[in-house]
Image (cartoon, rainbow, N blue to C red):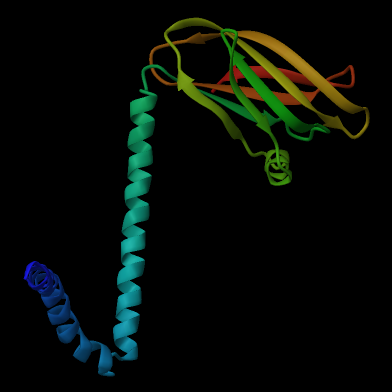
Length: 187
């Protein structure tokens, strides 16, 4: 008797779970089985997917901009850029940047990045926050010159951070001694 009661309870519980699933399948079967889908319906669906992708990408770009504003407010923001002087026989392999004795950036350049730099491109190597005042900036550059071979150059500078965003440009050019000269400027 106990076994029959347990089976009835199981059957009733199973029925409550399966009933909505069966109804959903019954309603969906005619739509699946009919060939009412046309090429224009599929294209319309593809267009909707592309619109959603575009919206997601636009939202992601907005979120990145907001994150940048939150992490690096314009009053304390400092950005450091690297460029190669024009008509130079210098190829940068790697660059390291320290601010106030703390390493803040290290970058090893790819072939494409080197091409861009040689054509006048500029690379942002670091963005961060600094308080107003004087700060020690140390730059280490490793690379090659076709005439004299490998070089490593380390230079130290003092930069003044004022109120508002600051941009510091590091220019790597040929040196008279056969290596490379590193200079900075406020942009």
